[in-house]
Length: 320
Image (tube, rainbow, N blue to C red; front, side):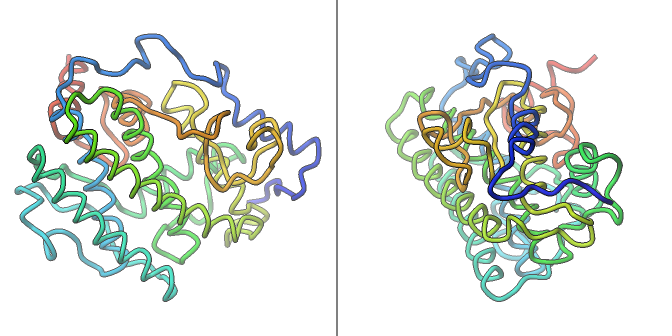
């Protein structure tokens, strides 16, 4: 598949291209209507347990990719009888990235333990971590923009760059959710827990983005002339579109209008005008993780929907 490559430094045409895909047809500062408002009535327990939907996902993805098995073999007590993920497998990783992914997988077990000990847990929901599901997501993001499906279908487990691009999808959404959660928590113990979780998720996302930044101008094989930077821009645009609440996601390279202090094209971290992390609400997170743009309609990584009161209530609102 032929496509345009993002040069560096940017030409005016490339800057216009990135502005077009990164600036949605709504305010950069987000939609302030009820559609994007936080769920104020939710308890601390419900808000923190909602985060388990992302923490379970990361644990299973990282552990399977590094070790070839997940929670059921390492810490089955946290699954609470929930079904094992579909399609998760060991990834082809070099020694450095393998150690990073293994470490992050064990970190996720710590996150589960911290949440379970503080507010209690919920059963692990069903996850679809198959290459087929990732392929569909990447088709919608990258193939959809560049004109057709990716051939062959994108496989996150095939090589190191592919897996890093798959990881680009996950921790960032989790950290957005934690940024959005902290202001709505009532208890000090809750805020302390979520602040710690936010720090860890932000660190993981920064590591993945840095590893990808080093490869930004490399072509993703075997897709002719589609670079790592192209993939990140398209994946960020997809998350903005599915989230439906403004620009909260940016790729590894941006025009200066979106760079730090409007002075950089480099974009190792995705941050707002004041270089603060973007916030997302539970409905926004679900729209993205479901891949449907609808918090009432499951799909994507969670084919049966999320667990916990917030996710299950939203599923119930959407039933006929």
